[in-house]
Image (tube, rainbow, N blue to C red; front, side):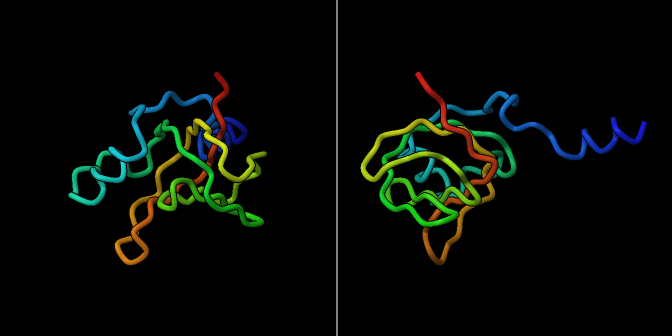
Length: 105
């Protein structure tokens, strides 16, 4: 029982189907106009271009922050991402994701 319970607390986000497959610009627009509440803490898939790489974060299209990621991305590379949406920061105007996986076509 204990093993089952602890596994259910930490879902495997790589196995969860995204609730939305979207263009990054549409996703950003929906957050700006307040039409993206159903995306919070849900898995979403989208394309983007790598615009910044730090030690623990990657930024796509200057607007989407992928936190705590170990993706092997390079600057200006277009990638497809699936991850859990943490929300939109009104101050920095960025959407944050964690549990990010790169989708290969």
